[in-house]
Amino acid sequence: MGENINNPKVSIIIPVYNTESFVEEAILSILNQTLSETEVIVVDDGSTDSSLEIIKTLADTDSRIKVFSQRNQGQSVARNLGLSIAKGEYIYFMDSDDILKKDTLACCYKKCNEEQLDFVFFDALNFGSENISFPLNYDRKGKINDHLIYRGPEILNILLDIKEYRVPLWLYFIKTSFIKENELLLQAGLSHEDQIFSAQIFYLAEKVGYIPEIFFMRRIRANSVMTSLFSIRNITSYFKIVRYLLKFVENKPQSIQELNAKTIKYIFDPAVYASHTLNFKERMSVAETCMLEFSKYISFKSWLVLLFPSFLTIKSYFKKLHSGRK
Image 1 (spheres, rainbow, N blue to C red):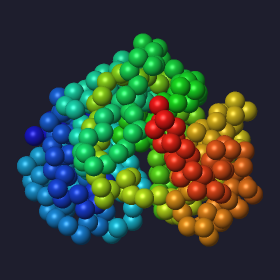
Image 2: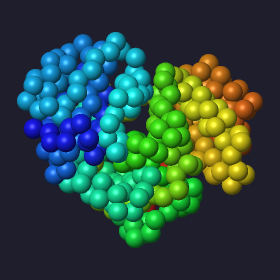
Image 3: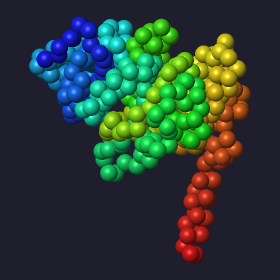
């Protein structure tokens, strides 16, 4: 298996950590793509279950799979390792518990190659446990003109205006030379590190396209990183993300700095709102940092629930009372 493995069209980078129940299905969804000229770089990030054994067994059956193992250092370090050895013309970041529809890579490669795009983005669908509520929508069909080619800042501005900007890297198919020429890497030691990388590719890209197809199937798991409760670590990571983005655009044109401020408000304000679940001491610490550094990116509503989380209980009570009278 794996023709042209020395000159792959796409490098798929998959960090793995304790996903023994799902990793085989995820990798097979890549191996079964209609575009076969790929390399699959799988980086086990210190799994303590049987994930690594499953990956090695798959690698024995398909020469396109390259297996690496490291001590647990986080998803960003694993992705950066993949980037450092990738040989493909394009990069795709896959998660080890999700599924990619079989014509995804072929469609993305064709569009990027024909239009000479820096990257293309597409849509996704959540699936999994019925007991988990995760309302964020990844389907933007009909909301964006997919016949146009955009500059990165232009389409980001549109996405922010219509509230359809989505951060996860598995929504993006990116030209390898674009990543390497701009020296882009994932920032280690952060939660939500996609927030930086995704913003950067939009700020820097000259040619971006959109494919209005649900290519990615995102599995919602009760014990996954992205569905766990919001913690002080989460908001602390957002502080670092905002500081990093502000520094990144320091010497960029005024238009990019203004777009960056708009992006920060879009991603940071919901994080401040979510901090209302923290204990009193943590909330006061968050409020102090926000007041000193980030107040202009925070809405009145988020300030209100951060300082007075009981407001949500009162609001819910009156809402139920009102609906009961109808």
